[in-house]
Image (cartoon, rainbow, N blue to C red):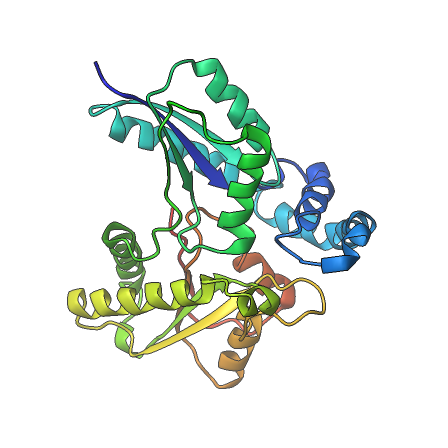
Length: 303
């Protein structure tokens, strides 16, 4: 008999309609792992409501540009189904999704596992390649709050990151290679890696996220140069999605593209390095900021 293994896929989540944008943002800003406030934590609720209401107008417009909803839930569901198909020859998988800030929430995943009945093992799999306090740790802490401590007699394993896994690196290089074919001489283009930003306050506390991202890029370039004769000679790393006045990881994605545009750069390839599904950014932010567009841009999202 095959082992019955429960697998929880953790993801950020995203609004499934335009009216859901504001409550989604409120859930996001209510998370103390996103914006630490220390002794001022009692202001988190009012501040989250204020920021969500203020930002929701612009954010709704960006979601309107990509189909009036986030694609994360749909794409994560496809990943869940394909993972089940890949594992089914070897075990009996029970795979559920736990979104952090929108449906299906962690509580929905817990109920689905409970309804599934007996399990021989439980695997917690955050779909964040790079470990961060604001993503991986936040999702796992929410799991503990809702699910409780590990059950006696049920082995539990956590996959905290896969930023340097050979298959992940190969997937990135393969997709980049497909896009490089669009250029007459890809060795001359700018390869722009764009990772989700992070407050410097978390980095200063020891968050390993920036190191993980940099190592992914190093491995991607190493393998890319081995597999492609015309691998781009110029590579840049930038960050996106800054929120609030606090200092975040730099340089910014939009600022980087604006600078390249003013420098006369005509061809570049943008690679969202820290995502495993399509996301609201970077394309919509680039358009909404009206940054100078290169003549032959290519945007690549790893899914």
